[in-house]
Image 1 (tube, rainbow, N blue to C red):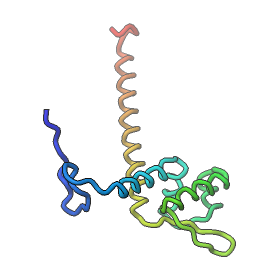
Image 2 (image 1 turned 90 degrees about the vertical axis):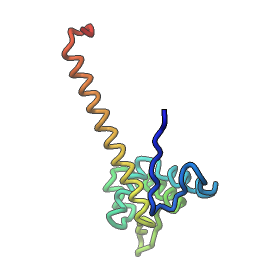
Image 3 (image 1 turned 180 degrees about the horizontal axis):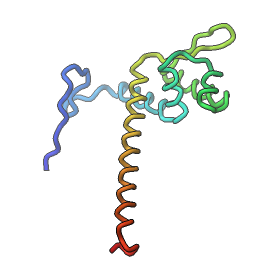
Image 4 (image 1 turned 90 degrees about the horizontal axis):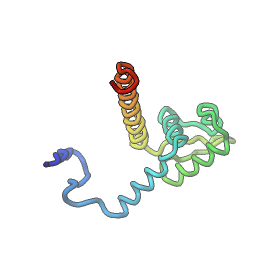
Length: 138
């Protein structure tokens, strides 16, 4: 059985999967970025920052988590180059380094939402199917 290959986007800078891969350093950097984004609180922070720059207390209020936890996650995101901070008086305003990062997170959330909807539909269909039986699968 033949597996269809995706047609490469002519505008993409990525190599064709069957030919050259990016250098190991690029793959490592991509892995580091994805690991930095791989926590629900950090995903929520990125979603908040795509709207506008925010200080820590605004993120605490929006996300309903403690200030130390927000600060810890911001340190991870800053170390990974996802956010940067700019002092404004006594506060630091955090913003996304670029819009590409927001797109990665939004796409992941949309994908998870679609997967959740499909799982819910499947569970509903299974429940409906079971409701039509006599309890013994007949």
